[in-house]
Image (cartoon, rainbow over the protein chains, first blue to last red):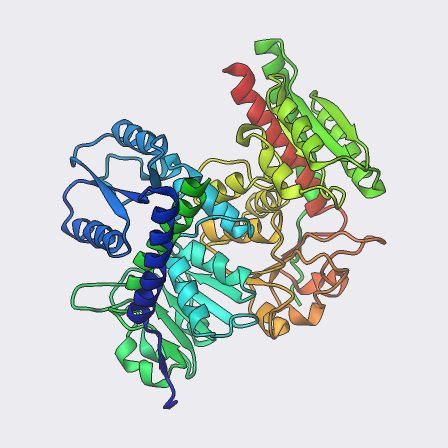
Length: 283
Length: 283
């Protein structure tokens, strides 16, 4: 049992990031007279999605940016959503576009994600952005995985040569975090619902990333002593994807739920919007 | 020792594919009066690259297509190459564009790859194509990995739930083959030059993909009995990336060098060009 288990304080780091971002936003406004704007798009009335969009809007305000909220009805078609995105793409005031996932079933979410102009894809959801990030080309990373990487780097946790096991392969979490860890020279194993003998694979991990979307699916006993545990899940009752309470004392480091990955996701979205604003408004 | 080791005959399969492609090309010509064209771009005078481009042009001829060869001098600039690609993008007769890798050092190869229009990227080298393929969206796959997948599927080798270990992480080989195997429900580990304890990781592999670019770097004794061994390397003297002669008798299946992955790469390029022609010329 390591007495030195480090809590990876996403809440604290995100606050520090916001303080820095606030200064950068003030500078942008002073130099250009323009206030950076993030457009958020919510389709339908899913209560969780409403909360997430609101939290992102609030974060914009905290750093001195404006958020424009586009709220479309549940019955919106793909064509209507594409048109709404195109309008935002062409609006010079908009520095970033967030399309809240998931959208209602009748909508082709992938087509809508990919409609977002690459230079406004501050949430990192486009195929092009994923491809560019994977190839180490400049791109806004998918917000949750990019937030995870920021947290790992902030705590100077070694990644090169480490064996990272990512559990989950979703387009905006498992796949991008795997490529980001690979680009930091980790050896990366990607596991998923079809994986045989998941416990034995996780047991090898120096770094475990839970990105599976099922409450406490990853059992504490599968994780070796001294591993770094990153939990990207969030479920009712404050549970993550990892049985974290039973493993945190013997982990080298771990993200709490809540207060770990969640706040980093929002801070990363905001940071990438500010970066976009610095390029767009100063240009 | 398994007496049933299967030689994955890329040479034979590529010939069968070409026979099928020839029929499809005849149909395109009969229906449209147009002959599909692949544009090949060679920059400089690297003898190996000249051979590869020539082989690809010959394959076009064998299936009844035309290839237009663009040969630019060693001192070509990025801007000049981008302009040459743009011209081919805008040429309605051209169904596919192959930019032979590698280009001379002064050229930004990534910018040039990404200049290729997605609908003509039949060699699968763009970031956008990689992103789309990774997300299971329609895209021409990177030719070598797509050829490997075709070969594995032809021999009906099970992939779902199998542990594939990819050694190498290049943009047109290691990274895309990892994502393709993942999308076929394999559990995928990506190893590279910074990986610790490579032999132990390879030992776990049900499927090993050698994509490291060093002659016989992957030792026979690292590979477990009954594994599927895919060797994407080709080096002087007919050596691959895997010490294949010492492992082939106890592998479940293996690709020979030469005659395994190499011919599949070219056949895939041609197949993707024909698929593009079917879309473009019939439209």
